Amino acid sequence: MKPIWNDTQEYDLKSGKYVKIWQGPQHPGITGNMSIELLLEGDEIKLLKTHVGYLHRGFEKLMERRKFINCFPIVCRICVPEPDTNEYLFATAVEELSGIEIPERAKWIRALNLEMARLGATVMGLGGQAGSFGLGTIGQWAVAHRDFLLDSFEELTGGRIYHMYIVPGGVRYEIPEGFEGRLEKTLVKIEKLLSDIDKVMFHNAVFKSRSKGLARIPKDWIEPFGINGTTARASGVSYDVRKDHPYLIYDQLDFDVITGTEGDVYARTELRREECLLSINLIRQILAKMPKSGPVRTFIPDIMHWKIPAGETYVRAESGRGEYGYYMVTDGSEYPQRVHVKGPSYTHAMSLLEKLAEGNTNADIFGIMVSLQTYPPEIER
Image (cartoon, rainbow, N blue to C red; front, side):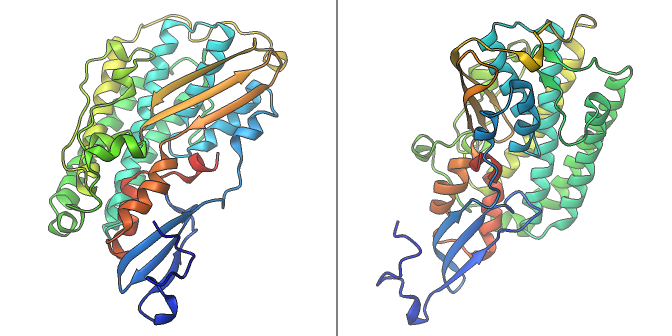
């Protein structure tokens, strides 16, 4: 692809036929922390280039300069709508390198925590997808229902957005008395919400006409572009870390990997709606099968003077956007030597978005971006 910042003969900006515009960065929004540079002919996108660097966070390097326990307030912020995946992976990497086995009940509570986080992030993502096509009412509904889940997180962890609940050795607290019943009421509300979204968005002729066929991802693009998660499954690739590389207690749960065939914006959005129902089902299974008693955290050394043995590991999990991984190297000191975070947004928001945008219109670009579930902090890690 020709670089957008060069005035090539084919795209001569002085001719008056083409115009170059910038969209973003702006906040709030899933895609609000990055900028895109567009070359347009009328309303048609000829070239697109993504620009990041507006967050300047440098999470990975910050972790190399902090003790292990001090990294938890950092990892949460790599993905604000779904911070718990980062907590789980960091804690799991530390546990593997230090030889810690967590209690059985803690595994179930961790899985509950992860599915609640996935559900909240995916519901909000559906609202963002609707908003990108002008259906702002659904965006308001989605944020409100995510807030019901945040109430549950506050009750369980003490925090609404950043929880710092999954820690080395297990989880910080036991589940409060009566929590299961209150969470069930929220799940019922979200099921009703999804039914309403069907009527307003999926049965909406305008949304169908704008999203069907838009930004279709062929199945043979999946591996070259490193596409995963629901973005890959909507194109027919049946891969889910929970099923293909089971962790925690997912091998004890009954579920199938949901896939689509069309691979367009409509298919990706519809699949995420189905995965909301899957998370609700998994939460109910977890609550029904979880051991009713037992410890939720095992003994760990003094966390402020904890030296992890030298070694390296890679751990992964299925986040709401796809496979999420942590590569950690330790040297026997009280600090991580290297932490590398692998999130799906890096390739989805950059090389894939640049390819998908060509030939589409300026009005559709945010619909495409949101359908790829791009979270800029995962890029600027």
